[in-house]
Image (cartoon, rainbow, N blue to C red; front, side, top):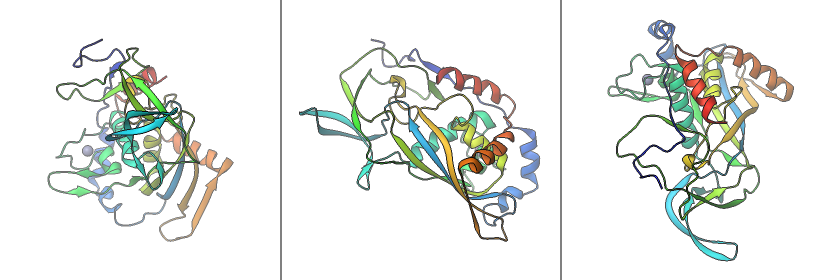
Length: 289
Ligand SMILES: [Zn+2]
């Protein structure tokens, strides 16, 4: 068994794009600041519903051990988050992964407390800076399972515990070393519904957020715990949207089916990675097969 403080074999460092100069030019005109308070025409405001499909078992840890009955026998397991009468994936778990990948693809500041004007990532996901706070324009609700999810146990190798922070990590296939620590998991194949709340988001910005979640990019990100052990791949697909027509027209448009598909294609056409973002994309595609 590998010592705790060594990188597992599946570890890959995820490189980060640099800031696109065009973003700074746009930010200087002050437009970004206004977007948080006033609804702008031609920008997307509303809710985009994503259908999430677990390709692997999912473990979002509750941080506590639980005694549960599995197969007629009591087992001590690492518990998962549970609320409102069921298991779910907290929006923060999804946002964290999306933000991390977004930083890599869009040239974010990597949580620099002095990020000003806000980088593309802070501008969308929000920022707690040394001098101010900025509300995000993309909100992640909790992903609730469609129906009652099946749960099971996964036995994983011991977790990788670096002694110090080692930067952004992504993982490939599972490490084949087992240890006697069962994780309670939501079973692979479970479907979830995730609301993405949009406030004055440009289609190109939304395309980057969706790309960070793997939409249309040929990779599937891992969420939650046990990534090193092959848990957590979740495929995301926009399924429907309720969008405000414009700043002046408060009526909503409902989009789904073929309309959703063509609107999504229009958004994704506007995707433009920041300089160096292609290297991050290659790593994401290479490890999350
Ligand atoms: Zn930033």
